[in-house]
Image 1 (cartoon, each protein chain N blue to C red):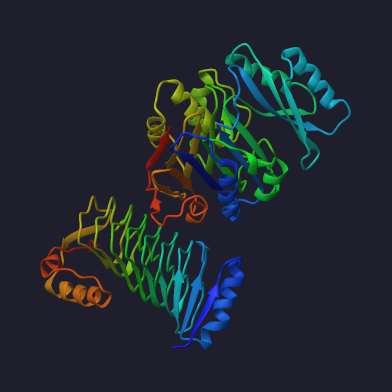
Image 2: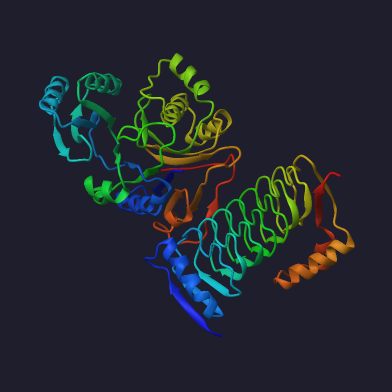
Length: 217
Length: 305
């Protein structure tokens, strides 16, 4: 595997992204050290490349990407994976508001908790939150799957139009146009395939406890 | 956008708060390029009823002499320093004594009546430093790095509704009770609904800036006996619009975030320190921890020593 290490120390956002885009076509993996929560890391990257970020990323990490598999060994700020069309974004820590906002495809995984409006206006793809998710999770959702393994707070699925929100923990309240039912055996099978693929270990009983939130027809 | 930052050390001892806040604000520089400011508490070790005044003085013949002449009628000037700044004016910093705190605001109003001067603030237990320009330049201009303190708040400003000048830089201060300051990222949309009752109670407004409205609101609540946490909780109920408010008092700092969570706020707490900022990158300047907490919509957090 061909690897290239980028030390982001003393680089501004544009210089960092320019360096990533210059090297992405020639290497299998880029390792970014000292990201220091900079914003927009990997914005618009369209290469089939692995990106390993050692530290926290700021706002809009992996925005508008098509193809890369980004792994963050730290936290992320607001709007992680925004408008992704294809690829993978894995955040080992927590994320701020709007994780997975507006994605069309690909997968966004946050192992810890997220802030408000997780998966808002998402149109496709999958967003998985290992911890809890905040206010208005799935706001104006138009497609895709949003899977929360922890609890969600108020107004889940506010004004949801299409797509599904699966919650294993407690749901404090539903938003307008949202309906909650238990996940079907087909849903559970699909959830198990997806979550197992990304290393989440749940018992068979856990899968029977998933709630499914969709729009009122 | 604006950047807010606050830090408090739990051991109640003095620490290099100026250096800590400068690092945090430099990390948040991209959130607000036009002005910046600090309120550093515990940095002035003044006897009772001694106050520090920061006064903007235009570089016009006689302006500083007239100011000093008036000040000498009010109080002896115990310490003074003229700090060269940008634009057409400098900042005159001095130490005076008054018989009681209630005379501070009238003293400021009297000075403001002079031509070519404007009082930035008057304080007893904290030092206010604010100016136009970049954080780095302001920190150098006012030697912020050397300021020790127990806690403080700071701000980088991206002006949206009111002018860009030294006075409108944050923090804002209220004189309803001593030494209450606020920095703010956002807009208060029910501004007049909040301002009207405060004015009817006799509180004076100097501008139409919504942060000034918030600092008087907070000081009024604290004056009524609310604890800092309670005043912040009430602010979430009473104030409309998107906001993250960071409040400084002589013994604490606290944040309130609007009900919809439309402005950012993150925090970190260890055994030694409690820190708040707009973005995670600023927290890493003062704490080596990845245990970053997102402040939820409508949530308030505070720490007092």
